Amino acid sequence: MNIIENFLNIKKELEALNYKNNLIVVSKNQSLENIIPLIETGHCDFGENRIQEAADKWTDIISNNKDINLHFLGKLQSNKAKEAYKIFNYIHSLDNEKLAKIFSDLEFNHNKKLKYFIQVNIGNEQQKNGIDKKLVTNFLNYCKIELKLNIIGLMCIPPMHENAKNFFLELKKMAIINNLSELSMGMSEDFKEAINCGATHIRIGSAIFGKRSN
Ligand SMILES: *Cc1c(COP(=O)(O)O)cnc(C)c1O
Image (tube, rainbow, N blue to C red; front, side):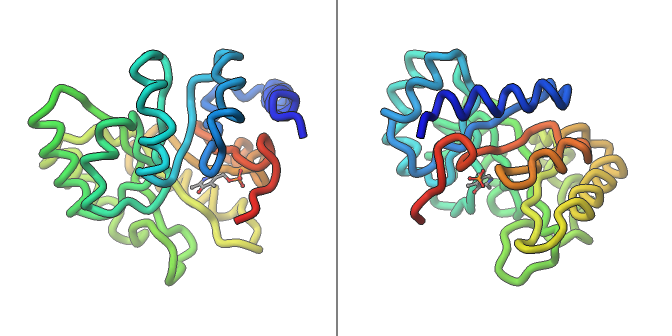
């Protein structure tokens, strides 16, 4: 399994699709040994879904390399928000007022603004993270107007084993209605579909690093 080769193949595929937007390499569960060669090719955008793991892996790297952008992709507990704020540049999983308020207070007290995606529970799934579709506009207004957070777009993870396309198109429509330009959608299995539907931030892990054991 050659990680760099996989990465370059993905880049080629993206080029063939004329996709010039953001590729987030999802490096969760990966050791630095696997990640550093990608940084050395000049890649700067990486996604993680656990705060402690991300802090352990990335704290030194980001203090030496200001070009790196870290994207938080997972469920974020309120008591981890402060730690997340320190190391991440993007939060893709903002989905509740309590968390939004904590970030707003952190931004008010420190000199660092993050960029946020609101995660939408696009398939109305019981166990899924993300805000209810009906609440998106209200939540967005709260985040933007009251909290002054820089909400740049919407994010979703479509239900497994269903055709992702309709969910991607629905998220796109919601973004347009809400005047948001960015769409974080598409993973290893469905990024081409996501790009066809207007994705601006695709998040790819296993197609680069190989299948995870967990
Ligand atoms: C793990 C993960 C990805 C990457 O998934 P792959 O199928 O490995 O490409 C993307 N987005 C989120 C939110 C993830 O948790």
